[in-house]
Image (cartoon, rainbow, N blue to C red; front, side, top):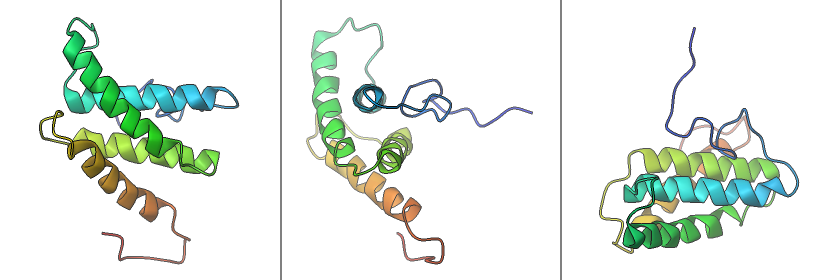
Length: 125
């Protein structure tokens, strides 16, 4: 039996099999922000287009700011994971300044749902 395969498999901070701890949390936030930004921007990992890399870095900075608002390690993981989920279907031109905040808004709605007490149901969208 195989598990669900997602684009973020193997990325520290996103893949549950590689949980960050201590000083690794900042690295997890940064690598997750960069991976999500590259996904949204369509940036090639080879890094041959300097303009595209700068664009992805700017988007990654926006994502990183949101990750660093986490108050606990669990909240940090939920933020990274929900942003990755939101980036999976994100469409638009990355140069559009509305795209990162729009993705963060979607991720925040998912984060709120995942952070609710178990007895609270419905009304999350």
